[in-house]
Image (tube, one colour):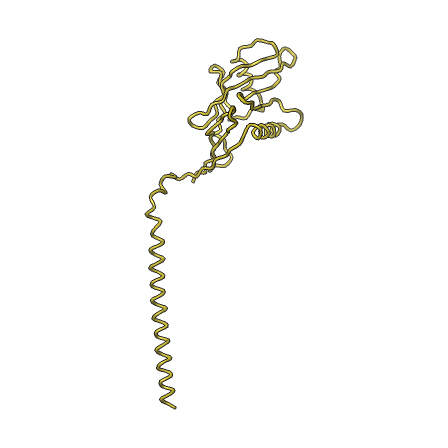
Length: 199
């Protein structure tokens, strides 16, 4: 009985030792395997192309942007009719308002041709305008527009150059976000902007 018991204990000890050695060996292999995988991403050189920025493309069309602008302009005032309208046609960005002249309201319509600046701002050049049959230099009209209370501060007027610039790159929605236009093609109905997330 002692011999049988001793033989059984020896076998049990041998298998326990074998199991421990196998477990240690498997743990070392798993550690080395994981270490080799964790070091692999550091050799991926294409990651430098992002330069710390992530960007997302926003695509829209004239109808959607017209609806958005209508809502945003309406939100600028608490009650009553909006002081002006901005409408995208198949060729122009059209500004419509009423100008106070000699005690009466004169309807004004300015048609602007859009182009995207190199930095992503939207440059609007005066193409034509009408002021209820009254002749005024466009420089004076742009000067009047720049003094309207409800015009956003990121819309900048250059009366002598007959330009209006929507400086979307200066918009401060969040300190980590910035915006820029990529395409503003009214004729093809393709409008693309880019939202950039800074680290």
